[in-house]
Image 1 (cartoon, one colour):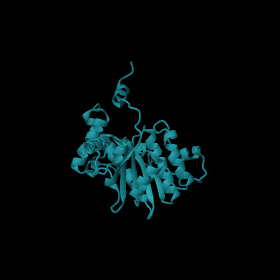
Image 2: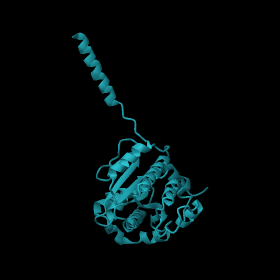
Image 3: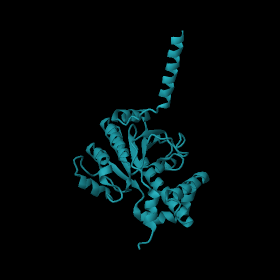
Image 4: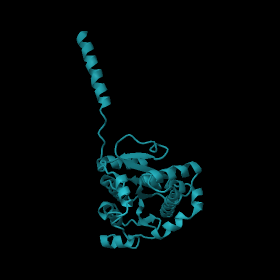
Amino acid sequence: MRGRRLWTVALVVSLGACALTPAVPDYSDASRAERLRQLLPADVILLGEQHDAPDHQQVHRLVVETLASKKLLAALALEMASQGQSTAGLARDASEDAVRQALQWNNEGWPWSAYGPAVMAAVRAAVPVLGANLAPAQLRQAMARTELDAALAVPALKAQQQNIRTGHCDMLPESQIAPMTRVQIARDIAMADTLTKAAQVGKTVVLLAGGGHVDRSLGVPLHLAPGVNVKAVLIRPEIAPDSSESAANFDAFWPAIAAPIVDYCAKFGASRRPPT
């Protein structure tokens, strides 16, 4: 009997240790393909990334290749290119130079080495790649468009304004917060318009964008046409979510390898100091 009690105690301790040991995230293509399968069917899938996290762009490639191989990819839309730019007129064997030219690619802002694999996977599958972001020439106009303030409910507008503050490390003058927020809203509206126009029955349009743009409570989903079946995915390291990351904001959280830690506020502050 004493031996049985000792065995029971050992089993309980062992199970407790297992419970305290976090599961190792599965970053395999097979696991990611299964997560994608669970989202389907969807008219639109929004992939919210961290722009300087290489594994996030690996997720992009996998999603594009998987949907294209099943003839389910209607279009690939990009925050990284402006509205009006498209590969629709290119052949599936177009060169990378031709694709970059068609999209008027800004390699300084968006390294082609990061986004090229997903873009070229779509081109090779004869799927159009569409610029979805607001054109640079429209940015200043958006700052002055006070009617954009009404595009979000007041709580969401306040939250978006706070995101602009914290996203710029609380270094922006308060006078710039409302204009910068309007730019964010105008970008979300432009992306939503691109997605709505590209939607096809029985297929999925994929958007690659920063995580803030795909937030259901603030971003692109609010501006999509009624009836569009949209799934918003936040790609992030397998860490505890912050207060803005909940089931109300995103439909799914996909684990990815964390990017190297960078002090963005130090870099931003340095960029704002006048040269000596």
